[in-house]
Length: 342
Image 1 (cartoon, helix red, strand yellow):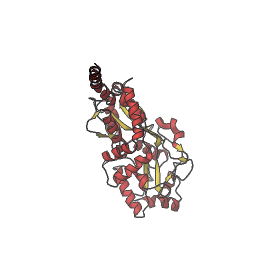
Image 2 (cartoon, rainbow, N blue to C red):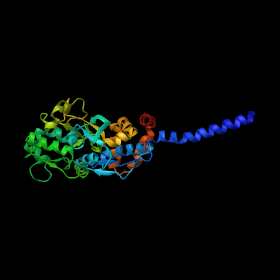
Image 3 (cartoon, rainbow, N blue to C red):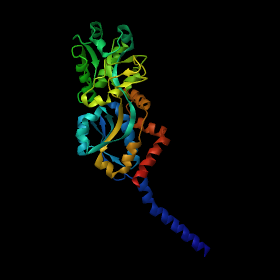
Image 4 (cartoon, rainbow, N blue to C red):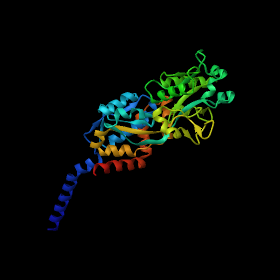
């Protein structure tokens, strides 16, 4: 009789495990059978954290189609229509100009990098000291224009933003607001190529003047305070939609700035995820994951530097980061899985 009871108990236990397996799998992989389309920006400094999120979504069971590389206007229109599902490269408040395009159909979620996305203008440190350059107004001086004029048109050449980037709008606003149109020539070619040319010029001992943001490989290669310095705008003057954020365009303790606090002229941005609302509502685990993910700016910049040096195996970089931060990542995954059962 005791053997019969033991055999029966074993059979029931195995049956319970078998019956429970699909439920356990569904809990671990709540996105099983759900496909989505990830977008990434035309600036490659955002591709690392894009790949991290893609790999975490895969752990939850979601299936990604081919990643689409889009400029800002195309992305925000596409995510509103549902042609793409998400990206993790919204820059807000800089991208607030696109809210009328997507609000009601898509939404911002979480913050991949809270308040760490800075923007501004830099010059090489040697030229800043030689010509006593402190603000953009100094580029109205003939000797400064001549030093930074690389094409002989009489204007200082500055690496700026390609058409379609939100920063292009802000830079154009600054050029007009500070009466710099006759003194500065914004270079709007491909940013990576233009900056590579600027770095080569710097290494040859020539003056350089450029716009950049963080995280970015430029800050890894041209270190503020050592190679270059952040310069200030003459006063805070922003496009009308950003003027309520004027106080945020002045930041304290910016390493390598010519002043403290530093009047950068751009509000500090959060890097956030933007996703289609219908998808988020149907997949609470995806919403919870996007809300939880936060990646240090230093890690982004370090990867960007590797990529710029020729190591562009972004998939491997992301996998290595996840492995190195497994305990942190497991906490995010636990939140995502819990959201799917609520």
